[in-house]
Image (cartoon, rainbow over all chains, first blue to last red; front, top):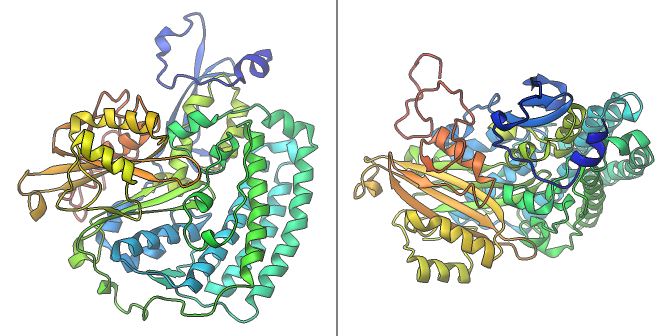
Length: 400
Length: 163
């Protein structure tokens, strides 16, 4: 046990291609499959762990258990039909998925989005970020088990708060989860009367409770013991692996697409980017909690000032075949709660150009899981669960 | 032709044209460079232009019946993207063109993130990456037949095991 705390939990990078033949021949290695059906894997994901005692020596991750062939489906359906499909990729933040998709199509088709729709998209994105991070906080606390008042306590509280945001979304779109509210060139659902007041009252409930939950964590010795210095992803490793979002910022890299490459109406508002230096599980948690506060601030600043005007660039599209692109490549990226969610589209596919020829989703969760073989060796199995919870992978987005 | 929404910055475009004799393709997308020089390009972009975040790898299959591909035969075009860090972040992207069956040099030794991305493209599109340390299927099972994102992959026939 001494080894886990001092030597192995340092700032170093393991060799993911380690040849086990060259490992200590005296050691009695054991293979342990964590998953695919395991509560800590947040879905179906398998980690093949090679253990020396309780210490991890090598990690081989297996993804693809949830592969549904979304990219092939995109070549068969038309652009208009794809938006509801994308809700199911990252099912914890469907708004961001829709936005990245319609932004890529808008770039391809040369459609300008009216200012009112861009404002509304920004508000929806920030509300979705709060909801997504709340779910992460609850699930992370549950992964840490008994550290936080018997495991599922904080999980239930966070779900209670997330419900407030889902209610607001339901009022706007009619759906709690899979909204289908973005269309190419604007938004489908206009803001109902009195919606802003409901958003304000939801945020007024969430904000003080967030401080309450944070105070659960930062004074809790068990929480600190299980997260501080565990699973360090430093900035250099994160950038090399293509990791973006809170995991990158927790490693001390000040990079956020909302501020650095503004889309929607982020160029009209000052986004304060939260960063941390340590790069461990604790830093990732603190960055996400700070992001929730920042999102609350942004929503409050924006919600009362949604400008008047049209919500869509044109009349609503009546038939799926109405949008056509014959050529061109486009790429659009948004800062989702998990990082840079990009969509690369090659236009001019089936249905006489109404389908993409090829569509590739750059999912931040897939990149973030790539760090596990580099950071887990040297940790114990219980640390692996904490690290997996702290990087917040969504399997629907990893496997697609 | 440009990559809409994420064009190369003027310096990168100049670098691509002057040092790597990049050409615009007839079917759009980022500039095309010679296959054997793209590792060198990635190294220059990473070390001298601060494109340090690994972006994406996209492979696209063009069978001979698509009119754009007829001159070169059946080809796979592979686009790479890298992202610069911090304020004013940009994407730098380029594409390679290889006949089906030929391989592309891997970027794993410059960007560890290319490991899984290239494995995914190998799995789904069937382009091989030279020098990749662990080129296995990523999404599909090891005994899968064919590469689903190829244009000639039939999706409406029942082939054992079920597709």
